[in-house]
Image 1 (tube, rainbow, N blue to C red):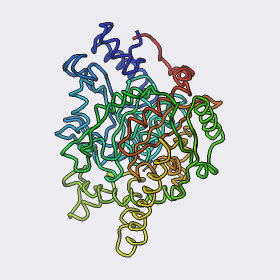
Image 2 (spheres, rainbow, N blue to C red):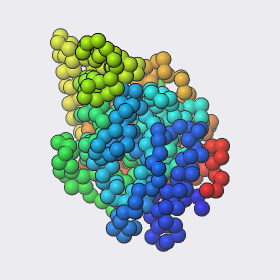
Image 3 (cartoon, rainbow, N blue to C red):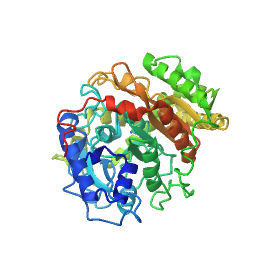
Image 4 (tube, rainbow, N blue to C red):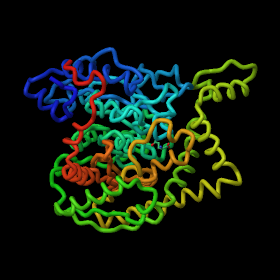
Length: 486
Ligand code: GLN
């Protein structure tokens, strides 16, 4: 029946009409995940089977819908390794708020997904257990750090997955894999139970195949949580209510000056083509100037590493982390951390410690915090003139595995368009927008006003409609064994 290929919304309809049961959906997704796994390695592990039935289609909004969860989000009693050696043995005794909410909504966890160690990376190659492959081209990365989640959704193993986004880790892999990824406003979704990377930037969000599904899942994740002091008490409106209003009446801002350098030609051409289509359908386009955005990557790598160096201090082999044998305490700390952390994580802890150290704090950390304030003012001012800002999600389509591992700057530049939404706290979404001549997904990003996810999702739905990606998705070559009926 191919249940694993259906969207959340289609599955809900099939359940309501009695065409299938949650157990059948789960089995279909699990079979698809099993057949994809040897080729793309999106999952770290699978659940033994579906959870006991909870609620019904009428009362629980995601009743009978399977999902995958990035392995930096706590699920009670399950591993929470962040794909790091240092957390190889760690199992949290509690659920993250999002895990709890999805369970209450009737969603069924299928498995946990691969990621760059501690969510630091843009290709999933920093995972201590090896990379994930892109289902569109197995020689390419799925992006990162939520590469496992994006690949699992793109390979039709689950209709949705959770990711976390500190500088682009939901949107950039969604872009590489031809799926939708939403980073909500900072504080919209509780971070309780998310392993902290950079606490002032981290947000959890959904990865889905359609914009409507992103809205459906977002609606369950969002809302106040007293256990996360940064979680906002603002009411969450129903993002589906106005989502079909289309491009007419939308004003979209285009920061042309930022798009002059370093853009892949097909990415640039796709942006122009989609903007022209949106304009034909009645959207107004205006130019916006965001000069501070030039400093986004530099600012991000100061603030994110500073926060990471502090957050990761807890992995010392005593309270958390695999403990190395040593003759004294200092040596034990050193050996545990040296063996436990991979290269990129070590690099970032060193960088972060440096920018916070006496004598450098003012030059780096304080300066970056000031730039961040200016960026926020600038982007909020631009968003008072338009409903959303449009940019490519990433300057290039999915790159080859191995291509950027020895070139950290190139790797960091994958996020040149995504980090500013984290630095400024605004919501942003990646939407598949076309295919390159070689058949790789292209993606555009929309950035919206704080707490106005509904408007952002409406704009994203309009963009999705003019791009018609649902038809292009069929161009993906099936993985070996894929399509064999379960
Ligand atoms: N790629 C960026 C980094 O390496 C963003 C990661 C993320 O959003 N978690 O820091």
